Length: 474
Image 1 (tube, rainbow, N blue to C red):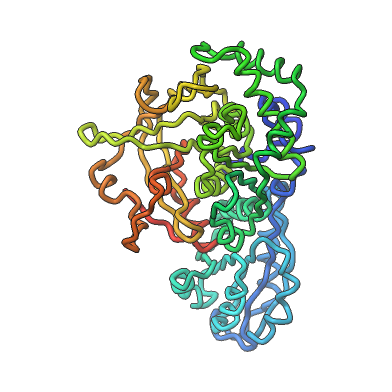
Image 2 (cartoon, one colour):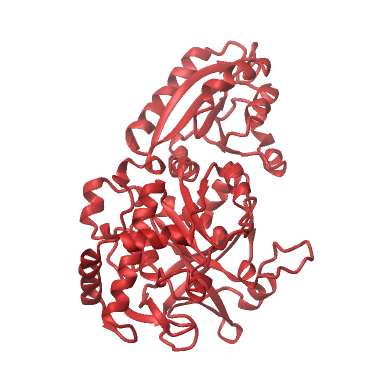
């Protein structure tokens, strides 16, 4: 398992050069960056049949514990294993459950056959539950698929190799990250966001500051610090084309205001109705630079008040260490290509601690006002394209990035991808809309989030353990 690059130590974080985006008093100690708490439990019948009637249960548990101790040693910052009781009947689960209530997930072992009713009670608690079934331990692993079909949060590993638990360390850590993340949602009053479903599904918390709150933070920001940051940002750019230096200063001042707001709210993510807010005069500047800097350092800034894309980034970036690029996809079936375009992009798309791509300082494409960033993402290789469609459905496709697109049509940053079948992708696009009701908001069907790397396996594991269905668009 690759060490997740999102979870930088304080020294690594400051050395990464991304500290302009740092929103917390100490990011390394933030609750969303803590180790996942995983509660162990052993399930046994009172009288063993399989694997053998004279099995030494205590000795078998000791052997498992020695393997788990090695797992803990390999990933001390990622996982904390606790618990270890043995349950012999479903009736014991109710009394045992409070001890596991604070855990992020449950790691269960079926020690004998005949433990389905106990396992079902454990899974029905609603806590993500991974069953590790060793060969000959019993037959109750076969219920895992049925659990998923019922929407329960469960997965199974059937193996003699305890190394097959390693990929689940990042899964557990992502579950913890989702559970303790906090998202600031900023939009006009009265708009419905659907955050209740995500809070119920993952435990993520939400707060709803107003444009007035952000304006006050902007006005309180240190103008000299904003000028210093703007000067550095301009110096590091390949070119500055449309914006003036004062517009960049204003964007950096907004960035400082956003950081202050996130710090006070103890949040690691923010999504703003930015196009509408700037057009109405609710925002003094576009937040494109701020969002780029947040995404570069493993936090989350997402445009257009898009909660689905925000949750998608929190899910995938947390285990991959790769920032997400929210896009308006453009199809060209004649070339079997999809071009992903938007005016907000991280510069470190290949990894939070990887060298940034060069960038141009541009105006926002749709009105030629304010400041945005055109990132020249020339990286090539596999990409994952995804988006939540509500908390229980997750749209997924993969492709191959072939390079940057420099074209004045469409949003500023563009990544060209080749897909296996663009026509099929086009037909399947937003296939989750099976109700037949036509959404009135095109964005809710259009947006996808691009991540470098093929993250299919991890997303599918997370789907099984947190209760969302993965729908392949191609």
